[in-house]
Every structure is written in structure tokens, then in C-alpha cells.
Length: 104
Image 1 (cartoon, rainbow, N blue to C red):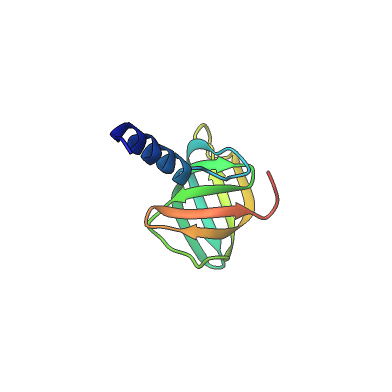
Image 2 (cartoon, rainbow, N blue to C red):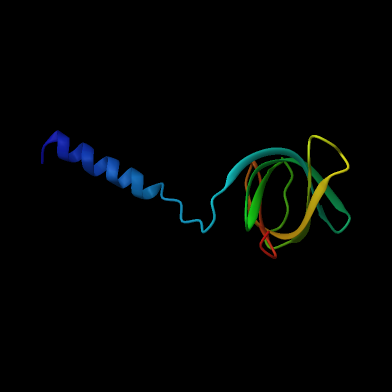
């Protein structure tokens, strides 16, 4: 096996490991957001959004599968918001991944 073949194999392995199997394309959106569950309110920044979920940057944590209400605030006016029921599917040091209960 020569160096070129090893390099091609390594690149193919790296590409296969980075394949994104999501059903919907995520778009990057920066907006103030709020996650509400019970009496707990978590302020954060919406990082990305797709038809069935969102990721909110925050240093707070919630339990996986917790039902929440996500509120997204448009920057042009504080009076325009989107609210959507969701559940927590991912919690990382960077934020909380949410899956919408119904598609947008």
C-alpha cells in the first residue's frame, strides 16, 4: 500500500464519519430565545433551526425528553415571537437541542 492509497482511505473514512443523516436542512439563525419548562425559564440564543427542531446556546441544563415551550424573539421588534412546543433531545456544554412536537 503506497502513501497515496493510505491518504485516500483516510479521507474517505473522515468523510463517512462526518455524514449528517438529518431529514431536514438546518439554517443558522441568531435570535434571542427562551425555553420554558414548568416554573423554570432559560434564556439563550437560537443557533440554528430546521422544520423539526432547534438548537439553543445556553449554559443551563435540562433532562432529556423534558417537554418545553420554545419562544423565539425577532430582533426587529420584541412584540413578534414564535412559540412552539418541543422536547429536549440533546444537552451539551454548548446548549440544548430541541425536537418540535409538530413540524413547523
